[in-house]
Length: 366
Image (cartoon, rainbow, N blue to C red; front, side, top):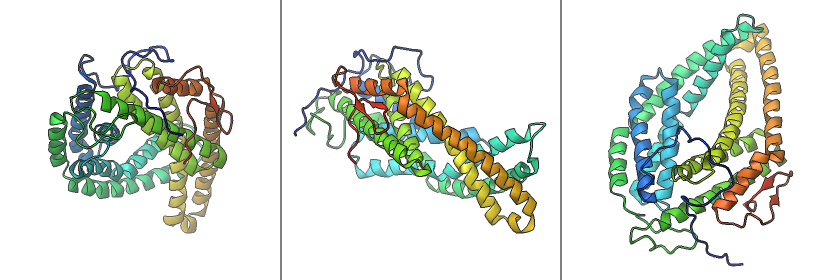
């Protein structure tokens, strides 16, 4: 059945389900009186400036916060580039790919930083069982972190980020409309030639529908599979919709601050679970590759006891996530917020997911 065309959401005037709340600190604050495109461009320039400014701190290697922050800035910048250039020309596609390569080059270093911080916290405790295991793990992590950072810094240096910054800044400073045809629901490719905001608003709406449907599909898959790969997919899908809703929040959509708070709680919970997953993988790797199993059998046994304790904590996180996704009122309200933003009838029937959680939109068929 052909789908009815819909009018893009008026992000500044719709009364949405979540009540208004305090502003999200991380959200950019461009002039609310500017057109939507101008505000989105201003946010993109802000994220690009932050991304470029962090390079020198990252390459020094001593600031875990800088590595985390440049990765976050790259995600936010990439999200806005995807909205501004839904069918990017080759030059923009190459620039976007370089931003992503920088983030990925630093991912292993970031994992090591998180694990080192956890090991430091454990070793600061006065009374702690299996201290020797954590001391050995900390020493192993320091060596691995140094090696991974050397490799990552070479990759980042080769990306020539100052040149990427200049080229993207030029495009974001002169961008007055989509440079390629915009395929948005209900709008022809030529829409926006007069400088209107309709194509960009339509793209934001379409992107929200797609990312929400993807998140729903990932949650249902995780409920069925109950494995690490499926939960990791939920974590990535939650990140994508969070960064998109940050753009919507910047455009002053009522209730978007509450939607972001809920997504941040979900993302933080899954992030803590992911840290435990990486901790287990790294400890087992240490036992297998460092010679501890052959040379220090008792220490290897202590490390494996830490792994078993870690698995219990990880299972508790998994159980809590499925409780959140199956019977959470906030999860249902998030779905209704998305539904209302997309212009659907909020009084219509709710779709019930495979395990009973409420969802406002049809599940993805893919």
